[in-house]
Image (cartoon, rainbow, N blue to C red; front, side, top):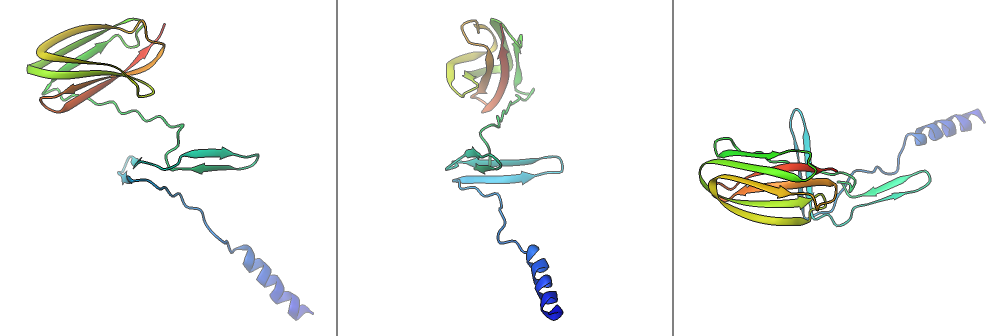
Length: 165
């Protein structure tokens, strides 16, 4: 009887260490990549088919690699060899002052976008030194992105502006 129980006990202990499958993060998208340096990891995807999170009483299942609760903000900076752009005050309650100074005459496309990605307005300027005041008074409190595209050099600078009461 002991000879039968010993192999059976060994079989049971051995089977506890066996797993049927493993779950690895996977994504279905049209494009994407991952870049790693000594200080950071950047993952990006384009055209994910599905992003969804389902919460149960004891488990959470997440589809998609980049989750919808993450807000990714990229704020570009213009090279000082091209010129200088100042936007102030930030945060603002009403008027935002925009000052642009370049070494030569430049064509500039301005775009104001809300935090949902909706374009609120576009403006075009041509010049070397430009000053503009724009009102945020009619906008609700929130975060806005003011982008400057310098068409002559294909350079871009983006400012994150907070509107408060």
